[in-house]
Image (cartoon, rainbow, N blue to C red):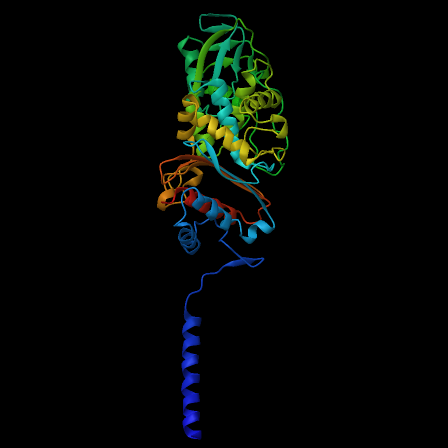
Length: 432
């Protein structure tokens, strides 16, 4: 028996050693762990938690819609992530015109770039989809024998898309008029807006755009490039530098370059471009007729729309058009009510929806929600700042109902966790 026991013990030991060696040889995916919670990789690579989604699907499979959504989101909110962070959620069924889910929907939070939804909807409501962003070249005086005796003005209209082709068109227009000499000054007319080059509450170390009515290649170098272009074209001018002056009302127009509302909206929303959003913001401000245009004027227009929706504008803090400011405080409810208003107004809806990133297809959602019922279905604006992750937009449920939603996370240490949470919420909204 002793010999048999020793043989069995040896066999068991060898078997266990083989199993342990095999397990140690298997590749293991590295994971970060925080407060007992697995944190997704921080390189923003899409990770689909299929186990959780399958579990949620099984739990909600027998429930009628929208109870399945309500139960599913409730389970997602059990994540340990929300022990140290906050989230506000609201989902609205636009076919039934009723709220199907809400959680901290009136909690004031920093929205990050979903603030651009407020800017876009207000601009479309106030200015219309046919609005144009214009930059003009004008002059005073006379033109005779190739000499323009008078002054030339570059009149800024905060067009973020003004490019080399537009600058070339300015210079060619002068040449087409036979001008080869400017006997006078070349002025920059920046009177459209106030002198502030940065927004309220912007962090000094963010990549902040320059808020000038005359920008070229995203920088305040418009006049330097224009004067250099004049020189290259052989057009002489007396002054070696350009100063600022408001163009007289009786000046003659040489050339007008413009870009459409849709062109600006596309980059502003798809790529979450802050400069484009701020240029849109000051178009809203200029529409009030107050010169120079200011952020205060734009905020007043936004507040008027918020009150029109039946909400109290005094309950929110509005600071800028892009969402860069740390002074912005909105709620999921406000964003949803804005989205609902836009959807019910065709003159806003078509321009807005076509500008939003599409899940798994383009823009800032290109690498998210790349499969399943959310792919190509969710059209929403993303928001990302330190500690803030947000998502707000539209999707179609499996029953054909059109939904709008807002998810705002604040106090987030690892952005990928909050992004995956929002993606899972969208899966619940769209899953069959």
